[in-house]
Image (cartoon, rainbow, N blue to C red; front, side):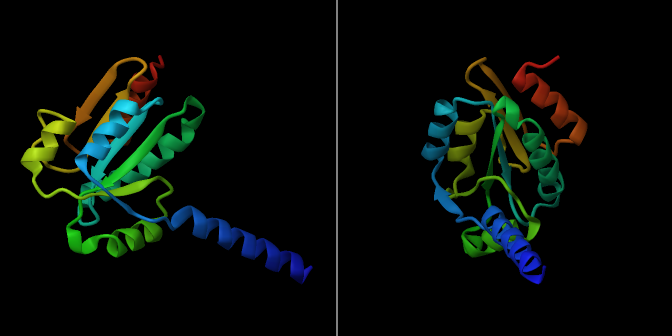
Length: 163
């Protein structure tokens, strides 16, 4: 009996470690542009930072809704806009502590005047910011604000074309 409990505990901890510890990769804006253009599934790209309280408040809603809509192939990419000194260890430990179970990358760009318009012409650089895209339907919508859980649900219906 004790061996079974030990094996179950080990299995659970091993699964949680794999789930919540991930290598944070550095990307350039050209990499993100490629991801956007080549996405074959509905995709949410959320721009956030570890020091941004509105960002941190909304991410759990995003993770919950993406999980609830995986059957519709909805995916998410969390793009950290943290300062260089937080990459990769600070971001990685934050992600692990908060148990984010979505892909996280760090945007290795410092000139917002260069990278923001490549995501959306109206983006001033403020965060949180979120891009919703569905290349199959041509759907694209950008928010430069914290999104409420209710607004997120409506946006997911729109990106998935649900009534």
